Picture 1 (tube, rainbow, N blue to C red):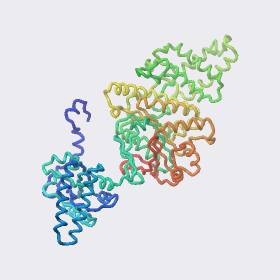
Picture 2 (cartoon, helix red, strand yellow; picture 1 turned 120 degrees about the horizontal axis):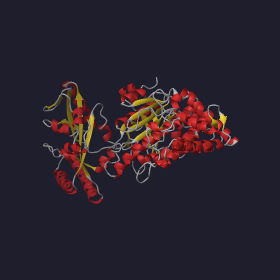
Picture 3 (cartoon, rainbow, N blue to C red; picture 1 turned 90 degrees about the vertical axis):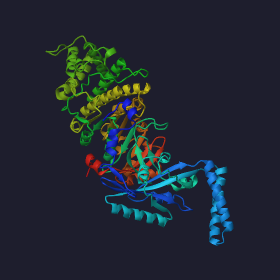
Picture 4 (tube, rainbow, N blue to C red; picture 1 turned 120 degrees about the vertical axis):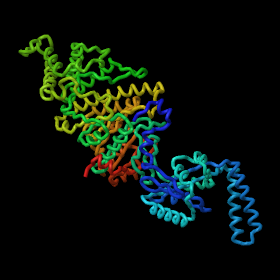
Length: 635
């Protein structure tokens, strides 16, 4: 259910959400128990604390099994705190002067000295008194089970030196405390004030030794090795986290696919636009569950006309499409596709192809200043291009009489171009020859491109089609990004409200490798530019060795290393021992020796997350049983 901004501001809450999370069956607050339609609950309040505590003393109090523990903290005013301490000092002083029992005298003197020291710290060292409520929320299906758990909890607390109780006739306020902070609780009718505890004692009591990631808009991804939560949002923007690119590496069975699907699920639920390049077809069920669609790139679900000119360049100030530059980029794209189709072509042949392609667009009445604005059926097709090449090469096409007005060397180049274009028109018409028939996906939130059948094609065809689809995705990213950037610049939307665009490539070694420099350069350009339009790229591979070349000193290695350098997030799961050297080179300075040594020993689901500017976090990816059923991972 959607609400416009006026309705949200008027209502100030989401009725649909309240309907989902409210207690089903109603709530009844009795003297010492809360009765619900699906069970019983009560709240136990800690009221007496030990006079002396050890470091991390709150660990025991917050680790009760099957119990929700809350800590509410307020701050006592300095004047009020000193007034109360002074009153207690006078009381303890009189007590140890007048007391005859030696033990009581010792207790009074000890309390007096502690209070005196506290008053000194408040006055001279900036000590602050905190007011603390600790509550335990216990629930069960039956009243008797609740009472048994209450008894066990109170006994455990007393054994530790603490005391707790159920506040009679206050269960409604105690229950509401779960949803309200300390200051709001002071407005309740029971007006309970917290236990006064020095801030140093409170600070030393909580286990801040754990590592955690707590993005404001993050979704639970797992738990760190020290017990902290990973609440992760790929599109979090801070002074240190400036882009939204990531890489995932993990051998078979390490949990890589589960992590990827969790990223897809989390971003899909948040309403981001997702484009998935699925090499093996394992995202189909998840995409369907998220309301997305799957498009097969083997031609069965339609084609994308490689000669259709898509917007790829926009003005940096106005965000309007730059048609002439987009046209130039398009020529370069088609030229690159030709290079894929004919890897052995010479530089002269490549330039000849560029020339005749440009002439062909002029012949087809495509004007550069509005090159991206034509209807789908107004763009030429490959068979039209083939006929144009024939008309240039031959003076009589039907008899294939060569054109005497062109040089022999040009004839040879055109003849080679003709053979290659003729080959794809004849052998792969469903992929390359025709108007774009794939349903417009610009406004589709989630689309997965299934490459499972395409991988069976010739490697030249696979690379050419991949390059074709990458160009389409860049266009999708720009179209959405321009709109979102305009709304952001006009302060109509905040950054969090802007819709993001994520491209995810699984089994990326099929596309990103030392034999495919063009794809590497193209994706590197996308990584650099996408952040301007709220876009990001995540690519995944089983082994770092599948992507990086064997020669670590080559120019190609530097290009691939640049791709990794441009990733804000590196999710590193188990790798073989023989990949450690390459990991060390690719992630130079980002992984410690101990982390590198631990990578081959990582178990299923264990991961090292390296975040540029923040450091590294070791955590375990956690998924629910429902998610596992949906993800359908390997056996």
